[in-house]
Image (cartoon, rainbow, N blue to C red; front, side, top):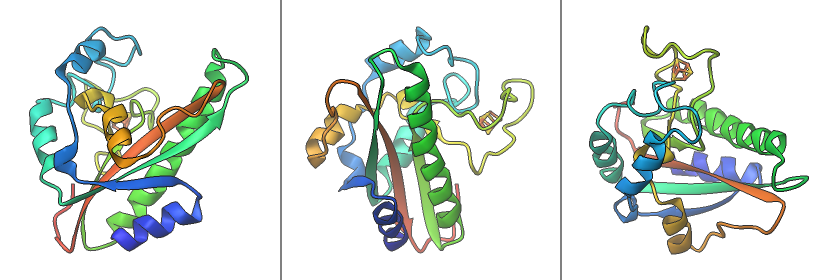
Length: 183
Ligand code: SF4
């Protein structure tokens, strides 16, 4: 599983770093930002609060994984307000995440991803009337769990900011080798 992840990241020229899941810092104050609905996704998908249920259950699951990798991709923007450029960047790194997730699902072991932003696989999301259409593909966002991405990037030596008129997106994959269990 690890070799598949590293091979994929190398093939796609993605910067990455390994970290211990237990080193991840979760901040409840970030959850308040989520509830304030600055992004407009609160209560709109199964991968954002309150649809994800108890954040502490997810945090415990992640911390119990033996290994994790953080990867990133940097995208140029025309200016700091280039929303379309940001959208293209986020979709690009999430397409990488979905492709890698599909590959890992065929291997023994278990993997769980944290996404850059809310799930946008369906338009509209089935939340809350019907169950998630693709529970094996949908990824919870880092923001939804209050993950301090800046902290873990700093601990691993990855750059968080790449200069003016750029945007940097991160994705996390937590994994264990060999177990037949699946998320
Ligand atoms: S996969 Fe579809 S139904 Fe499930 S959370 Fe994402 S948008 Fe909603």
